Image (tube, rainbow, N blue to C red; front, side, top):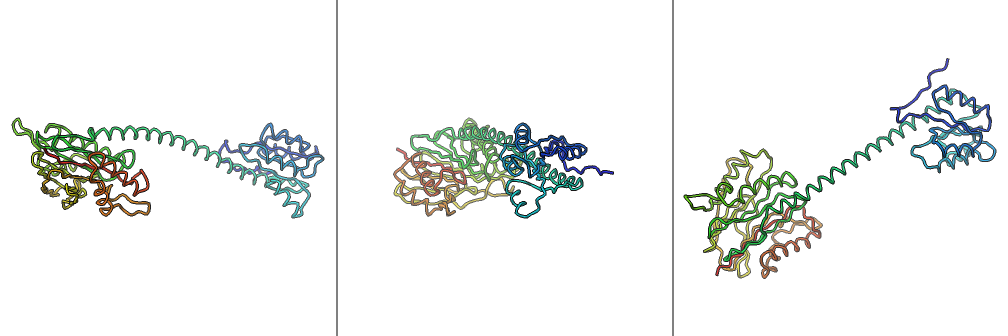
Length: 418
C-alpha cells in the first residue's frame, strides 16, 4: 500500500504544484507522470529539450524532471538554458541519468542541476527526491514572501517617516518663530539673538522682553535632551516668558498700575515649582535670566545650571562670571541665587549654550573656552547678529560640518548709552 506523499508547505502561497517531465521515451514519461499525478501534482510533458524550453517560457514549472540523454538538445543544454530564463521564483531541476561518474555529476551541477535520479527510476527514491526539492522550494518561496512583506512594510515606514519629516520641518519653522526678533535696538542698547537647532527641532530658547521703560530682561534656556519632547517643553516655557503682562509672563509683576521685573532668582524658583507640579516630564532645563537697567548698565543675573555668561569689555578683555547654579525641574528644594555686575559703555554681555563650547571637531575634541575666547577676540570689531553668525561659521570650521550634535544658541547684549 502506497504511503501518502510527504510535502513541506507552510501555506498555499508557497506550495509546490507543477512538475515538467522531459523524456524522449513516451513510456518513461507516462510512468513518471502517473506517479506524480497520484501524489497531487499538475504534470506537463515534453519529449525533447526544445519542446520543454518552449513550455518553460509559457509557464514556470516548480520542478523539472529531465532525462540527460536526448536527441537534439540534451538534458545538460536544456538545464543551462532553463537557468537563463527569467523567473520570479526558483525552479528545482532533477536530472534523470544512468551516469554515475563523478565527472558527469560535476558537469550536471555546473549546468545548474540541483539533484540527480538514476535510471531506471525507483518510485520510492522519486518520492524522496521530489520531497527534498519541495522542501527547498517551499522555504525559498516563504522567504520570498517574507521579503515581499518586509519590502511593503519598509515602504509604509518610509511613507510615515516622510510624513513625520515634513511635520518636523514645519515644527522647526514654528520653533524658530518663537524668536520673533533676532535684533532689537533699544537706543542705549542692542540685543541680538541666535538659535541654531542641531536637528529639525531642539531644546534651546533665547529671547528678551521689555520690563519697563528703562529695564530689559534677557533669557536663555536649554531643555535636556533633543527632539520633539524637548521642543514641546521649550514651547511651553516660552509661553511663560514672552508675554508683556504679569498675567502672561512669570518674570513680570504688577504693583498698582506699575509693571516691573520680578527678581531673577524668584523667577527661577517659580519655574521650578511649575515644572515639578504641572509638567509630567522627565526633562529639566538650565537657564540664564538677566535683568538689565538701561540707564546705568546694572545687571542682575540668575544662573540655573547654564554655562557662565561672558562680559566682553570695551578694551577687548573677556570676563567669565557666575558660579553655575542648579538646573530647574530636578528637585523641589533647590535654592537659586543671583549675582550682579556692571556694564560700562561699549561693554557687551554674551549668553551662550553649551552647544558652543562642547562642539566637537572630527576627532571629538571640544571647542572649549580655549577655542571660544580667541575667536571672540578676533571678532571684537564685529557687532550684533554679524558677530553671532561669524561665531557659527567658526564652529562650522572647527566641526568641519554644518550639523552640530547639540543646539547652538546665544544672546548678545551690546550696551552703548549716549
